Length: 310
Ligand SMILES: C[C@H](O)CC(=O)SCCNC(=O)CCNC(=O)[C@H](O)C(C)(C)COP(=O)(O)OP(=O)(O)OC[C@H]1O[C@@H](n2cnc3c(N)ncnc32)[C@H](O)[C@@H]1OP(=O)(O)O
Ligand SMILES: NC(=O)c1ccc[n+]([C@@H]2O[C@H](COP(=O)([O-])OP(=O)(O)OC[C@H]3O[C@@H](n4cnc5c(N)ncnc54)[C@H](O)[C@@H]3O)[C@@H](O)[C@H]2O)c1
Image 1: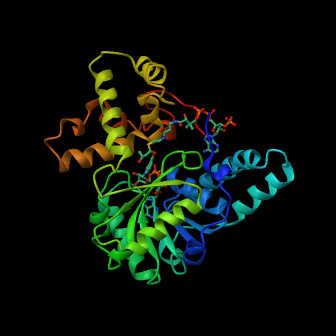
Image 2: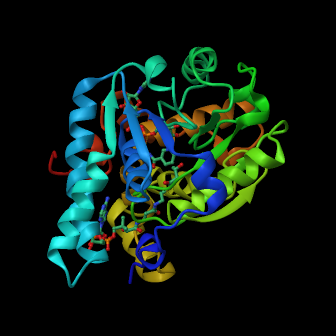
Image 3: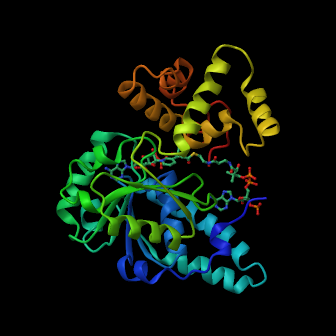
């Protein structure tokens, strides 16, 4: 049975966070950014969700609205009016924008959830560093890049860290909070407290490839794709095996489709370039072919499986 951290937790942020973080800007309105915006708004904080693509923002607003309706019915299961009010109020706390620079002018925390590419993240953070107030904390939701390398282009390295959420953000209860080499104690504790304030259980990890979860999960997914590639078992049988034999909620092929095959490929490509001697990180022709064909998993309607387009 899935347990909702957000339900069992009272929506009272700790006093430190209440005074430090009132206004949060999420850059990247895709799969992860929309979920992060939602949980932040559910916790009573004001959010600006930014994407360069206004169509993405429209799609995100729709998915946030649907998700909020489901979640609010669970939180207020005996009170439909309260449920409707909760969903409405949370939705109203989320503004959208296509301009990252103006969106960070009055924010306390920026969480970046754009494409998994170091150069693109650098270019964004350089612009934001000049535009955001001095007190603003910057965090990246990167799956696989080094927090120190992302932070290398900003002046506020002491106010930079990793906040790594899991998909689907409104449901998954974990948040990995990552300290860079220059992250100060106050920045780190504010990030931990903020994570708790949005209903997540926080674990901390050094700035090491994949932090905790992805260092274990990505090689596992990669090995599953290699098993398929060798013709040892079908995608369906690999998934059934891991669900029924290891009690995983999704099999590795389903999970790769869910995470996004492009994101999975970006992670492996980055790691194999950086650690060429590690066989677990080597590129996988089957994965590369699917991505080249635009088969990115659930979000594109096809990956290892076919999906109804949303
Ligand atoms: C790569 C990155 O850096 C890191 C990562 O994110 S790695 C990926 C981590 N995520 C995972 O491993 C996810 C594994 N999968 C799961 O936990 C589950 O399959 C799942 C929670 C996604 C879906 O659960 P499942 O029982 O299979 O399906 P489903 O019945 O559709 O959903 C369960 C409940 O969650 C709800 N739900 C699912 N997604 C939701 C969302 N986004 N918002 C609100 N509710 C949602 C459903 O409505 C359903 O509610 P119900 O029980 O009241 O009907
Ligand atoms: N997919 C997952 O399961 C998952 C889980 C945890 C972390 N992450 C990480 O989160 C980040 C986002 O992943 P996602 O799956 O949400 O990707 P996504 O492709 O769904 O969304 C990324 C969004 O960023 C937007 N974007 C790109 N450049 C931008 C810019 N300069 N300014 C503003 N918006 C910009 C794109 O238009 C797109 O909508 C990546 O770093 C990824 O590694 C992904």
